[in-house]
Image (spheres, rainbow, N blue to C red):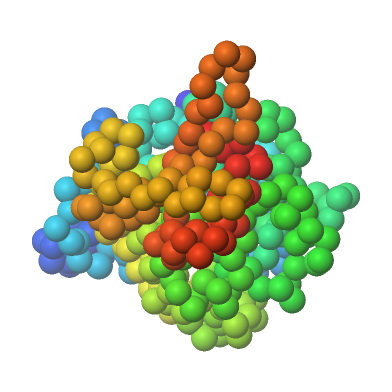
Length: 385
């Protein structure tokens, strides 16, 4: 079984836990240890998994990802008023080949998805997103992938899979379960014009770093609609990550990336959260730990709501435009917004169906000014469901 390949959490981490106060995460996480074995998955909410595979790194790694020190920094953080059961399943080491590692990642993540446990993947390189995506095969037909990254990671046509080209494999490989891909925080000078054109042709969403940091709340609807979130730590500015050579002077701040992680945690559709490409230094360990903490914090504030289920908790707004009649809903509880998207394809002799697309209040005001939001248009063209 794939779980047999999980390496227990290091004794160094367990020894550190002994010194922690009772409110610390390390005192409240069920840990995979050499002595006790794997914790029980039943009724768990989230499970941490380290993946130390780095052979497909675009920039070759000088050493293995130090998941031990990431755990030490994470475990010392204090819990909020949370009502969730958190597991730490340990690490997946390099297999005989990269494909072997991918297979183990896919099987373990798929097993957790079937148990309705959210995997938090701490990966050395972002190509691990590919086997995580493949874990949805047979579990969910179409998924929405959100990448927090300075690059789109399409790579060249003839390029083998790497941390800079895994998205090409996701798009082209069968079975194709990708419904939508959204990028948050791309930087134009890292992306070829052909990649930007491809994003447009496939009706994918992309938000430039400047647009994102001007108002972080614009990321919330995208993350609310995500099933899989992949965060490339290289999207964070170098000064926040310990001034490594692999990081850019421009990028997200620590506060901004933690905001994104919290939005991802709150998003009730998010089934997997992964963070990749971090460096082995104390500042990086601390920030990665805090990013994971904010995802866990967000998870504990999840609220499942829908204007199609509990209508009395929503206010409905009809907005006539020159071409469309847009219908918006605002939650009276959370003040979140949705807009209806009619299906482009209608079955014979059946009424046209509609779906709900998460949006912002600004989208509603833009529609009132006769400007149809771009995300609505792209969702409509793709036959959003």
